Length: 360
Image (cartoon, rainbow, N blue to C red):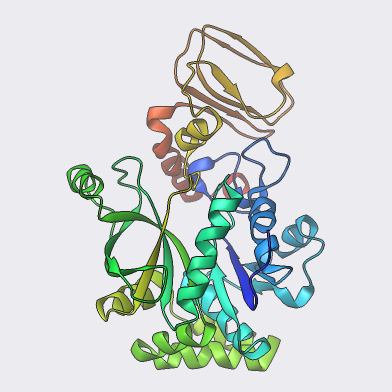
């Protein structure tokens, strides 16, 4: 797999993954965990997937609390390419700062932003889509990768795909749509004109910042000031930046102005949003068996199905239960069903409200 000239991979590594509690915590979020049984964390797998295309041109933006853990997992990443946010300001600030830094470091750069916690198993198909996106971005487009939907999911945003664009391997984006109802999502999938929005964007850094400047010139100027001023500017300016996602700050208004392109992506993609999706990832054939992520010798089972994660070292016995989720860690135990996997987030909220920050 050959690299793409002047392509930089930007990896925002943030979020707490609260629907994957108690495995994922604020201090050890899901991107630091191996959730596929590959022996590599989601972050490491993301770098493994991108590094052949970027040939070492990788920049990671993460929270200050996670900087040391990221450095341990990515020992080849230089200090100047590991950016620690003093506090969470959402994706526009994180990706925008990366753009501002790359604008200064490599004026010819095309950057691609890819979350640290996604699972993509077909590296070749992914690389082909990135190459097409880079070709379109080099012509001045803000480009996104649109995942071909496999079912009417309501947990994802959608991209309304328009006609092909002359001269580049991409299509016009007509609009971005927020998470729809089941009936609307079903219409989208049946139409064949909508893709899932996985939040993957490829663009020239200057194009991204100039698009931001059209709606919020101070925001763009502040990001450039941080890139120029270093640690002192970061400490002074960062806390004042707006909390807003790149989709809302730039992608949606740019799409309305006809300046966003989409490259259709047919590879399998999973964002591992909860234990139900993790179970589907680990047992795609839905075998009806009990799936174990971890040391299988710790599991005793009889006529059971679902997902068990033995992360405490204790033996777990599961008898006569279907579609169960058991996650055992040294200080917390979760028992639920795959159907109720989305409700785990509410447990985290209740613990936080009760002051049990040691558990979240």
